[in-house]
Amino acid sequence: MKLDPHHLDLLAPTVARPSYAPSQLRQGIVHIGVGGFHRAHQAAYTDALMNRGEGLDWAICGAGLRSEDSAMRDALAAQGYLYTLFVLDDQPDTEVRVIGALNDMLLAEDDAQALLAKLAEPGVRIVSLTITEGGYCIDDSTGEFRADLAQVRHDLANPQAPQGVFGFLCEALRRRREAGVGPFTVMSCDNLPHNGAVARKALLAFARLLDPDLAHWIGENVSFPNAMVDRITPMTSSDHRQRLFERHGVEDAWPVVCEPFLQWVVEDKFVAGRPAWEKVGVQFTDDVTPYEEMKIKLLNGSHLALTYLGFLQGYRLVHETLADPLLRRYMRTFMDLDVTPQLAPAPGIDLERYKDSLTERFANRAIADQLERVCSDGSSKFPKYIVPTANQLIAEGQPLDRVALVAAAWALYLGGVDEQGSAYAIPDPRAGQCQARVVQRDGLAARVLGDETIFGTVIPASGAFVSAFERLYDSLCEVGVSETLRRVLGD
Image 1 (tube, helix red, strand yellow):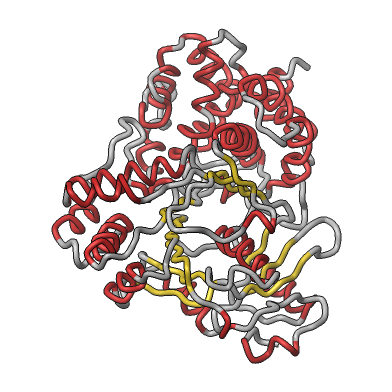
Image 2: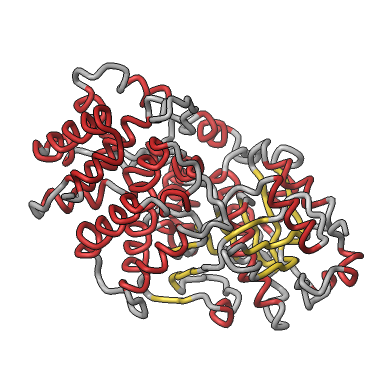
């Protein structure tokens, strides 16, 4: 059965469907950057609330600012913007559910003025973002806004015909202020530390360059809640589509697949109201920092600890790395000895149970999460997920082998050939620049660790870290991943 609003009653009993009618919905959220994570996370929470008969005035209008977003828009539009949430576990499919909370999607390249008009509507009270770390235009080495970027320069010169996210937000807020309409909340759902603060910093930096008075108004009136978001959402494959069709009879051009686990902790700072997401499992807090630190250092840091080592061994799926006893023990030792002592208590969280759950989630065979996805953009992930842990270990004089091994494995991964002799591409916008630093062994540590945009200033200045990196890099080259892990683990 092709997914369509007119066919919902004909779907198999195994497929849950919206309990609300599309005609009941009114849009209250514009989400910029519609991808798998948003559809499996924020939109899923909103849909769950609507299925309780609440929040019907918080429907989501998607927005795409990149030409690549047209594929998602076209696939969803052909289905009345419905899509299937396909939850995968080692057990039989735990949830198959049609989501209706997203009911439109606008593309900037089709009609920028239509998108600006939507953002300026009084009914839109939240603008949420999943634009990736790089989308915030913040230089990792300096922490400053990148006003030199071509898109930023364009939007400063053409404020009423923007192309980038901050150009759209500024022009929409300017129009709302002139019309006497209140501001909206800007809510980042990206997986980066203090995401709300980052969004605020970037938007205010852009606005000051454009119009200092507008920047002051935004700073006084717009709220930017920080949030911790978590759900593993691999890329949708043709196999996923086929499995959905064969098991449940649903023909969906772009379903979203995900794990059963779902978590969202967000600061309750919404200047124009919000959905009652707490009724469907969202945790609101005054300070998201301890939850954020826990997730970024344990989940994301451990992901990287597994990723490059596993890829070098020839594994291509996350669950394959957890089936390797050495990798599994290395990851848990890294969590227990290197990361856990650095974490502040997070109310309501049992850290031992949380770490156990991470192991179970990574080992989920059904989700078949791709190592390539986790490997991608390593140059952007290291500063956020590994470097803070390493810096604290250095400052406290703690052992460095386990954390230095992550960096050494990444450096060897940049060579583009695994232990089986198979070549692969490096999915990173800075791949060429990073790969150039590992072409020659002589001076490799200084070239790799000396990149302050990735490793900062503490790591290259630590003789102990540099020594551990060089020793472990050579070990990986000479005896391979497994023997190196045995040495690091003291076997």
